[in-house]
Length: 102
Image (cartoon, rainbow, N blue to C red):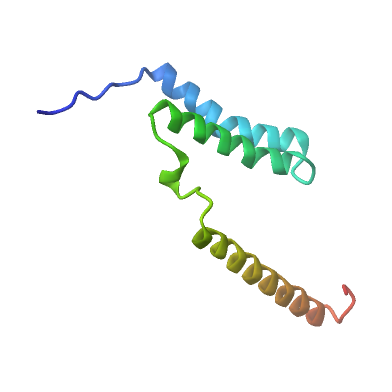
């Protein structure tokens, strides 16, 4: 037996697109990316993603957004790697510009 797939109306799809993609970007630009808008935009995106998954009866665990020791270790590894690469980038830039930016 095959399941019937519920089709959404074009207005619903357009509304979800506006909420899911346009709103976080608009908030980010309206409040300034270097201020709270830069932090609020990803939080809105996470909130909208959670809401959409909740509508389908699923959770964010399907995306891997679960606090587990393995995920925490990936977070730590990513932060250390990012800090090291960013430090190397600053040093290379300083040597190229003649050590004026340090």
